[in-house]
Length: 466
Ligand code: P71
Image 1: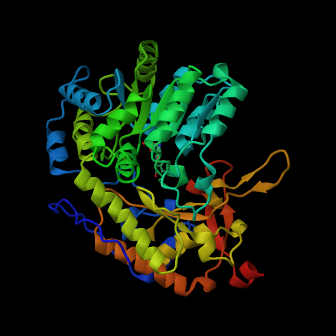
Image 2: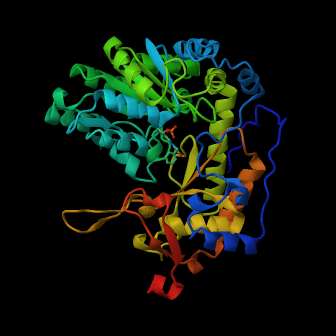
């Protein structure tokens, strides 16, 4: 039975119209964009589930805070208010605002990663991975094996594999590991949470070897709510108390505030170490701005200060995670597989299972992304072979990811239950004609990050199934 989720703990005061363009127009838009949804216009989307990053709705308190924004260059009131919130929620000794998560990652990597060094995590998100590599470093993903099985219902599928982490540290040694990380929730693995017990064990292990420990806190509040729901001993703690405990285990954090701080732009970098903080400020001034604004406007800092508390609100979190679970359940009821258990910020549809007749080199998840637009003007994001297949320079062979997924990320406080029903019904219609959907091939593909700019054409079905 479909779980009912708590009614939205807000009502709607401002509306943004959306328009469902007719099927013939959608077909033309697809051709114009070379069947790449990144190249399409937002105005041609009815429901946009490309990302939950910076796409949520701010509250009346956040918009009011924006009016109080102090645009002074140094020591603005907005900074002082953000500082109080960051101190209260995370409790680190020092912090700087950044324009978004990847800017915090860039500064941390610039200050600490040297060529040839390793940075382990459960799974790095793409931007963290790229920022470590940009400094000559090497990211390593040591998540538990259960994370790779879409049917496995481990309650904390984002956990680090502790045996792998110990073996990794023993192999490379403290000198080759400037810091270690963990991502909560694990976005690259389906928005899966990490347990407090695992974070504690990871912190102990890093500290045993004197390695500083950083949390990628983009979706920390969703992770803390999962801990409250699933981890014995945390049922009666508040999400804020759980967050305090989590961050007390770490030496610092990077955060894209565009997620759980419910702002359209912003990020944070927090640390305890005085010398590192000095380096961070110098790098920040060079790249982003003075340490009391970090590349943001004063009003952005104020919106973040308010959003940090709203993201921790338990009525909101229960509605939010309920909404994701509801969409997944409705999709599953239509006989379509999604990654289990459902994560925090989105539903990851198993496109490979829906289109068994499309081989991975003809991009089944891309085919589903196109079909979802064609059928319902809905935009998801392909997380499969378009994004991740890569050529091994040594063997000359292509490596394909294990799963062909379409992520439907849910923006915060933005869509209602009827929007979600529409998404599930649209997918169900596609399932009914799944056998007639063809694969795709590239007509243009750059070497790196090809999903953003690639162009495609559909293959004839006879070719696809031959
Ligand atoms: C998401 C994003 C946004 C995104 C980024 C790049 C390509 C497509 C979409 C961003 C994250 C994230 C985690 C765990 C750091 C960042 C970077 N996620 N850590 O999922 O999920 O933050 O975008 O503010 O720079 O759609 P940033």
